[in-house]
Length: 196
Image 1: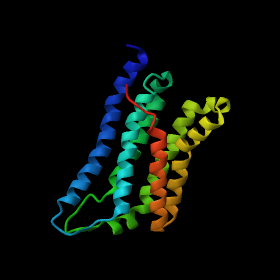
Image 2: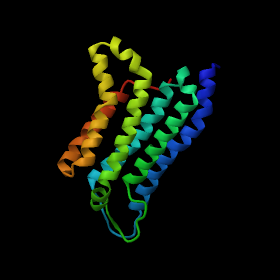
Image 3: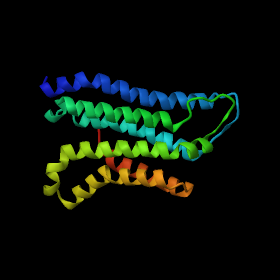
């Protein structure tokens, strides 16, 4: 077993807990809504945002596998940046759906109140993701083919720009379109990934 794999296995425990907390928060909040005794006003936009938060957590699990053998990932400050990034990921998941459902809940109202906070967290996460991405591929960008540069730009910049747009615009139509574009960008990014 290489030192990189041992370091990866050591760090994976903490990362798994943080990712698991994000997934569990979305699942628990959704369960509370589904089992609520009071009326719930369901909103597709809120559910799409929560689904995107869930996909982000799963995507980060795949990203961890992709960097398992990279020696640069064994440095303390890299781990610290990843813990901070996963902490923000948990906050995104926690903000996606309401935590308390006492006498019913209006998810459309929740999204309207929470929209700016949620998307600023997503933008902060994407900024950190961009910084980590540049850490790994920054030196290679000058030597990449145009198609590879466009793929890297999609993975690193497009989600950040869309998140910032959604944090500033209140139009629900723009939010539907933005979330759809985020899912497309996500699918393009993760389609070739596999754990083997």
